Amino acid sequence: MRGVHHNSSDFSDTVRRFLRHHYVERQIYLRSRGQVQFISLSPFTQAVFLAIGLVFFGWIAFSSVNVVFKQQIIASKDQRYVKMQGAYEERLAHLQSSYDELNGQLVISQERFLASTREIEEKHRQLTALMGQRRSAGNVLDHMRQRYAATMRDANTDTHGNTILMSVDQDSEGVNIAQTTTRPQRSTDSGTYVIDGQESGGIDIAGLAGDTGQIGTASLIDTKLTNLDRAQQSLINTIDETTDRRIRELTSIIDMTKVADVRTLVRGSKDGARGSKAGNKKSSGDENAEGGPFLGLADSEALAGAANESAFAKQISRVSQNINTMGELETTIAKMPLAEPLISYHQTSGFGPRRDPFNGRMAFHAGEDMATAYGTKVYATTPGTVVFADWRGAYGRMIEVDIGNGFRTRYGHLSAINVKVGQKVAFRDVIGRVGSSGRSSGPHLHYEVWFDGIVRDPTKFIEAGHYVFSKR
Image (cartoon, rainbow, N blue to C red; front, side):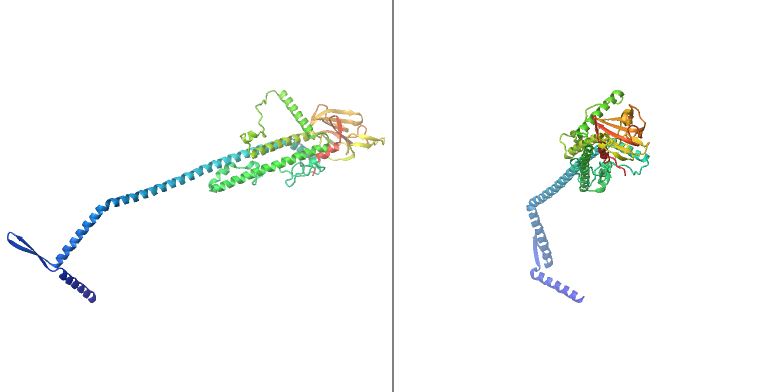
């Protein structure tokens, strides 16, 4: 403390000495009315006045400078404000541009999403129509297979079901069997087509849009749409390959009978179907009258929705035409006597030259002899109309059925006849019983197939039928 007090005292003394040296006491004399007065100014008072003067002159100097440069300062501030405002407006414009761009992308994404879903829905509708068309085309043979299986069960035969053998094996290379000596290969048919683990009828287009909140990003939506589009394309490719292969197999089955050109048979079957429909319409009046222009599934513009077809629409059109061809081939096959008239038998005499069992001389045998137990049921090998049901010479008791499309079948040496002339018989109806009537050496069925007035080898028809019906 002593040191601090001593230092303060020294400083005060120094200031006093400085003031006494530079500011000596001065007196100001004033004369007024003959009197003289004076004012004494101590050094301290002079220092105070000096300080006040310096402050006053400093303020005057500052004010002068401020007045002189005020306009420049204001202009500088205005310029800074304008720059700040410009930068702010530029930022706002940039943000608005970004917002507009984002909004535009959103609108484009929305439109693309809607367009994609509409396209997928249209493709799905076309695929569904194809599936329906395929099911309709195969109804005739499906019904025949069911009837065939039912007769096998009724006969207590060791049967585990029946299978159509013209289906396409997915692992098959699809060789054109119609152009080879090999017969149609056995294959499986699932009857359904799958997209991403779902059957063709199970595509949830509405659910796709509902998933957007869960997916959260447009890229994932695009990925899902792309995957679904690929799945649909894969499905139509599979159907395309399947229909091509089935057409080859069906054609090969018909070719195995060696009765006529496939196109001739198909054309005859179509003409017969048209004649039947015309007769039905005439007899039924106007109960189910319908009309309008035909716009089939194969119509390109109807499928694509525009004159400019997409590749998918063209493929759909092609597959639709293939399915129509398949339907025509299957209908033709359904009108051919491919099934066996007996459940169980053994062949005792085939078609063609043979040694006659009664006189031992060579003769032509016009059918196939199928030996089995007396009284065994005889089944109609196709739907048709009975045109003969009586005794006919060497045939004994015989039934002749007009199938249509140029085909007739004969069943001879029967012990009983269960039908009459003019009666319509369905596929696998029991029409008679095996016997040994007429020129016969024992109980058996003499079975003949006629086409266009010429007797044909029934073995070829039955052999081809093995690729339509299978006993397992």
